[in-house]
Every structure is written in C-alpha cells, then in structure tokens.
Amino acid sequence: MRRHFRWDKKYLYWGFTAFCVIACAILFYMALNYIDLLGQGIATLTRILSPFIWGLVIAYLLNPLVRVLQRKVFGPLCKKIFAKSGGKGVGVARTVSVVLAEIFMLAIITGLFFMIIPQLYSSIETIVTNSPIYIESLTNWATKLLTDFPEISDYVAKLLGDVNTDIVAWLQTTILPKLGSVLSNVGMGVRYVLTGVYNLVIGIIVSVYILGDFEGFCANGKRILYSLLSVEGAKKLIDGIRFTDRTIIGFLNGKLLDSAIIGLICYIVCVVLNMPYALLVSVLVGVTNIIPFFGPLIGAVPSAIIILMVDPFKCLIFIIFIIILQQVDGNIIGPKILGSSVGINGFWIMFSIIVGAGIFGFWGMLLGVPVFVVIYTMINEGITRKLRHSDLPVEKEVYTNLDYIDPVTLQAIHHGDEKKP
Image 1 (cartoon, rainbow, N blue to C red):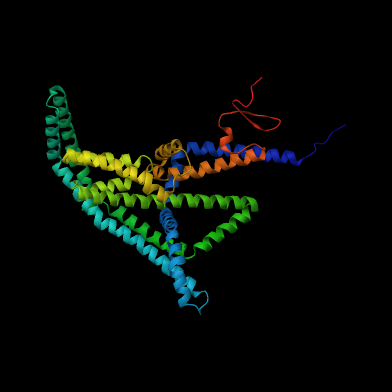
Image 2: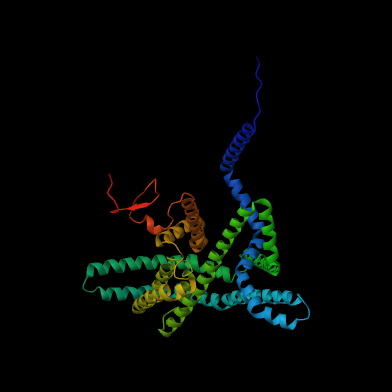
C-alpha cells in the first residue's frame, strides 16, 4: 500500500532554520571575500552621516546640562513669568536652556583654540629651536654627575650625542614643518578644515533639533521597541539602555571634570615652581589624565623629558609633584567625582583599556572602561538570574573557599565543613 508523506510544521521549522543557517554562512563567506569593499562602503556611509553623528554626540553630551538648566534655573523662572500662558513656559525654558548649553560648548572650544593652541605651538617651536642647547646642557650635567665613572660617562655622552642628532633632525625636518603647515599654510589643509567646520555646524544644528524635542525622540524609540518586542523584552532592553547611559555619561562627565581640575592644579603649581613650559606640561597631564589607569604615566613621561632637557633638578621636583598629585587624584579628587569604584577589579580595568586601545585606538582607551562595566554587569546579572532559577546561592562570598554544592540539599559545603568520603 502506498504511504503518503505527512507534512508537519516541525519539518517546515527545521527547513527554514537550515535555510537561514546556509544563507548566513554564504553571506559571511561573501563578507570575508569582499571585506575591503565592505570597509569602504562603511567608511563612505560614515562620512556621509558624520554631521548627524556629531549632532548625536553633541546632544548626548549636552543633554545633562540642558536638563539641569531647565529643571533648576529656567523652568521655575519661566513658570512664574508665564503663569497665565499654560505650557508656553516649558517651551521657552527648554529653548533658552538648549541655546545656553550650545553657547557654553562653543565658548569652551573657542577658548581652547585661541588661548591654548597658539601657546602650545610657541612652546613646541621653542623646544625645537633650543633642543641642541638643551641636549648639550643635559650632556654636561650627566658628565659632571658621572665624573667618577669615566666609562659610563663616555657612553652616556655618546648616547646623548646620537639622540641629539636624531631628535634635532626629526623635529626640524618632520614635526616643525608639519606644525607650521597646519597653522600657517591654510591652503594645504583647507579641505579638512572646511569638512570639520561643516560637520561641526551641521552637528550643532542637528543637536539643537534633538535637544529641543529630546523626550519626543525617546518616546518614538520606545514605541518602536514595544512594537517589535514583548513587553518584558522591551522593558529589559530599555533598562539596559538606561544603565548604559548612566554609566557612560557619568564616567565621561566625571573624567572630564577630574582631568580639568588636575590640569589646572598642575598649571598653578608649575607656574609657582617656575617650571619650564608650564602650559604645555599641564595640557599633557590634563588631557592624558582622561585615560584611566595608564593616563597619568602617558602624560608624566614626556612632560618629565621636556623639563629634563631644560633643568634636571626641576625634573626631579616635577616627578615628585606628579606622584603626589596622582595620589591626591586617585584617593581624594577622583573618588569624590567618579565614586569610590567603577565596580570591577583592577585587572579588568587594565584588560578593557588594552583591548579597547588595540581595537579602537584613543577612543577605545577612553571608553573601554565604561563599556566593559556595562558588559560585565550584564553578564553578572545573567549569571545571577541563572543561579536563582536553579535555586543556587548568588552571593560571591558563598563561593569563596567552596568545596562543592550538595546536589540534594543545594547547600554550599566549604573546606572543613565535612570530610570528603
């Protein structure tokens, strides 16, 4: 007797799954073969969307300031002024807050450009011009210091002489011409300047639109999430986004404020101690302090070398001051601004910075810690939910010196609680 094949939804499900797996494998294979073309496409798309990316970043960074201005200053003020106009005061308060936040950002950018950049260029130019004198002075100092050790003295003198020749040639033929071309020869960099100005201007306009109706953009995003996901899934995703926002914006704002304070303190002390190139050194220390863990070392080493070429004794004083300053920052200023801890072990902080720097460069070093904190927290919460679902203890202390968990009672057995058979 002929038997007919019975169609089952199970076969449809497995067939569709197999098709998706094969399709994904083919797409992955094609992506690997055309990785260069794919990279060019992504780069082109990023370049086209650059003004909007700038606008999103500006709006994201300025949103906390706008909310503070509206809630603490202009909201109550406009509420009193427009008491009889209903909701008009809210719109005016938001508009004024957005405009003042944008003006504040532009004032900082303008101040940095017109006050610090020319002085930094002047300091670098002076270093390039006087570098032979500095190297010769450093050589004489090392020679006097190593008078009782002639062999070491000759080696150091030869080493410094070679370094002098290499540094002078590198600075005069490479660095200084490039600096001069960037700051004086506008024609060579006009394309990049115009592109940067265009991205900044359009980005500011985009950020004004976003900040003007920030709640509306967030509401549309929530509508999309709830339309695509289940209520529970959308809630979990929104909670994750909120946690990510608090972690990253809190870290960035705190680090920027902390670094500005450190740079200002460094500049004041360097001026009082009559350190050479006080502004250049302070900018290096302040900017590199933004990078967690390695930042102080990255900024202190070149700063100390710059001072060493001018005055070795002041270099020693500077190193001692930087050590004290970093201790104050790490134990007093930093914890007050950022909180006592980012919530992860120092090993993971170093791991996140190294991996982030290797993949994304400077931005990876800067954002590696907060991004890793988010990933670490999500994984930890997933582990916690899994343990609770299995009726197992979730506290970390329970697993310290743990021998095993009894499969029947699910009780944690530690070393010394009972002897193994």
